[in-house]
Length: 354
Image 1 (spheres, rainbow, N blue to C red):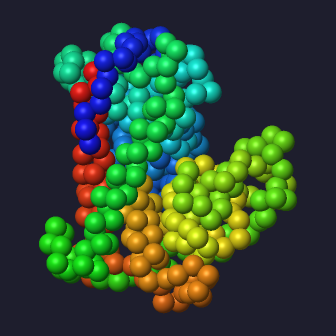
Image 2 (image 1 turned 45 degrees about the horizontal axis):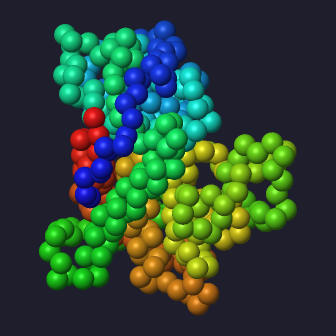
């Protein structure tokens, strides 16, 4: 990606845009907090795995769509949290004090990358601590329009990075069908069904009709057969007696023009006709789910055809995808590391925005 022209960008002090508060946490020792059967992520003082140190059965203490960091480690602990989570001692969160309705996921991701890049220059560590005061006083540059942050620019830039990332990951699937490209070794890769052990439970979805939905007090994403915005085609009211699917599940379009579109859902949702829900059988990381979603999309587009041979008849029978393996099982660490690498590559493109 070409370097961005930031000559017209404006400098902001973090304190002009955000307050920084300590996350609320359960006053428990780790052996009582963490639980192998837990479903709620615990964000700790870590620079790895998006700051998630494990999972807990305790209730979440913080809402998602926020940026967190540790005041005891380095700038590498700055992460965007999409889902609700359990806080931890010395983990801080950013709270918008202005333009509160403008800080969407993509705008926060853009800000997070710039924030991290600037903080890294300050060489915060265990001695020169990354305190709330130090963070609030940092000066960063953002694109502006009419002298305020340019929300559309930030949205579009992150969306562009997503597209680049998807294209990068898809080189894996392309190689499967074009062995002349030697950029990735597929030795030892195998095919897996989505319903195999340690993969997914396949739920056929709520099969709702969008035109019959209401949006008086919308709180739920409606997922249709679309190939952008995570498949979200509407924001609708929750239906009494019909529990939405949980955030973190994947959706997959079985047919139509955008057959094979597969997305990780960041918020509770309903689905339209011909959209299935893939429920991980274990606590898959975001990166693993991202890797799999790309492989699902590429497989669908290569071997199935809209309105002719769609996924409806295959998804629970013979549909399969290639995955890297270790000891004949999916190599989750390979997938984790590969996506982490791609995220880091994209993050590096914004390191000069300071």
